[in-house]
Every structure is written in C-alpha cells, then in structure tokens.
Image (cartoon, rainbow, N blue to C red; front, side, top):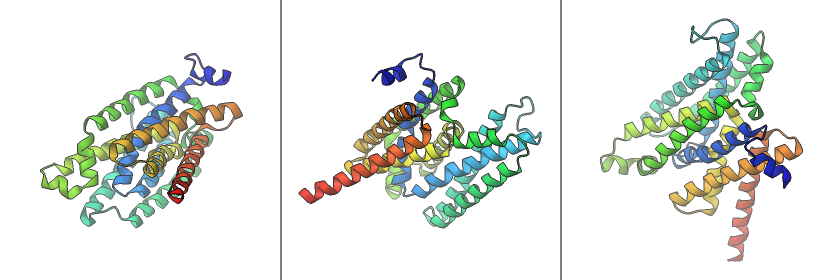
Amino acid sequence: MEQFLEILSPHFLLRNAFYAGLIVGLVCPQVGLFFVLRRMVLLGIALPQISNAGIAFAFLLHTLGLHFFYHTESDKAMALTGSIVFTFIAIFVLAILARKQKAFTEYRIGFAYALAGAASILFVSWNPCGKAEVLSMLKGEIISIPDIYVWSMLTIYGAIFILLIGFHRNFILVSYDHDMAITIGKNVLLWDILLYLIIGIVISFGVMTVGPLVIFGFLLIPTIAARIVTRGILLLCIVSSAIGVIAALVGFYISFRFDLPTGPTDVILLCVILVILYIGKIFFRLKR
C-alpha cells in the first residue's frame, strides 16, 4: 500500500512514465475502437511497425549527417518526423487502394507489416553508431520519458480525445455504416481523412514516446475485451477506456513492485483481462 501511495505522489521519481501510461490507456482505446468497427484490426498491428521503421530510418539519416531540419540536429525531432512521414504515407496509400476495392485487403497490410519489420532491422543494422540508443527508442523505454514528452502527449492526446468526443456521432456513423452516411449527406471522404490523420498522429507520437508494442496493445486489446461484456457503442467506449486506464495503473504498480519492464507488463495485463472476461462470458452462458 505504501508503494502505491508513493506512485500517486506528485514528487514520485518515475511520475512521467506513470502519467504517460494513463494518457495512453485513456485515449488509445478510443482510437482503437475505429479499427474494430472498420474491421481493420490487422492495420492496427501494421501501423506501429511502420512507424517503427520511420524512427529507425530517421536515426540512420541522423547518424550519417543528413537532417530533415538543418537549423537543428535533434535526433528526437528527426525520429518523430520519420515516424510521422512513414505512418501517414502508409495510411493514405492503403486507404486509397482500399477505396478502390471498398475494403482494406489483408494481403496488402500483411505485406506492409513484413516490409516495415524487415526495414526496421536493416536500418538499425546499417546504423554505424548509436545502435543501443536506436534500439532503446524502438522498444519505447517508458521509464525514461522526459517532461517535455509528457506535456506534449497530454496536449496532443487531450486535443484528439476532445475531438473524438465532440464529433463522436460522425466518426461512428462513417465507420459503422458507410452507405448510410453517404445517403444522409455526410462528407464521408472528409471524415475519413480526419480519422486517418488522428490515427496517424496517435500512432506516430505514441510509438516515439512509449514504443510500438505498448501502442498496439492499448489500441486494440481494451476495445476487443470491452466488446465481450458490453452492448452499444457508448458503453463500449467507456468500458474500453476504463480497461486501458486500469491496466496502465495496475501494470505500472506491478512493474515498479517487482522491477519489471513497464510496457510489456501493461500489455500482458491487458491480455489477462481479455482472457478473464472471455472465460467469464463462457461460464455465464453455460449457467443460463
């Protein structure tokens, strides 16, 4: 109990990691909801890996003396730019191809995932120096998050959360019933582009801050778990974020208490919650 109270203290040494986990746990499930509604869960796996490749590529360029911004040599700015560029290119290329066939085809997403994974490894292996720092960035060392990243995450993710809540009906309609949205006069293309921009920003900045594994886990697993025990979109949104926040809170405590890596601990805990809910639902059905 004393350790838990220590974590909640504003003077806690690792408070940035704790706050970042809570922000990700609250916001990412709201974005992941649209992966589930649009039946593009595989894309939620591929995009963090593609963002990963962008970070590795940016670090490679930085090491070779090539910079996106010549007025600064910040490797962090380079990595974030690479993450954003790779993610947005992938989203819009796949989206354009998907509009022609009315769906995201799995083989294209699988191809993008395999290509990004292989490219990430090659970019890191080609990096003549700083390999340890690159690998640390790709793993997403949550413990080492600086203040500026926490405030940036709070600002960016907070704005996205407000945007998703404010235009919730439109995003849900366009994602759940595309044809109905067109029939009642919604600008489907505009809302699709806005949603893809949100997805790109959340994944790019999230992978840069906490790593691809954590982002993937909090994007998809809370929503999938919430679907097991809820009916209706509103309740699904509330329960999925609640699962995300609880997993981030408890996962951080477990990792702090037993000296475990925070990111993988959070994801394992999310999987445990999903399995418990699934088994509980099966027992509930057998008793009826």
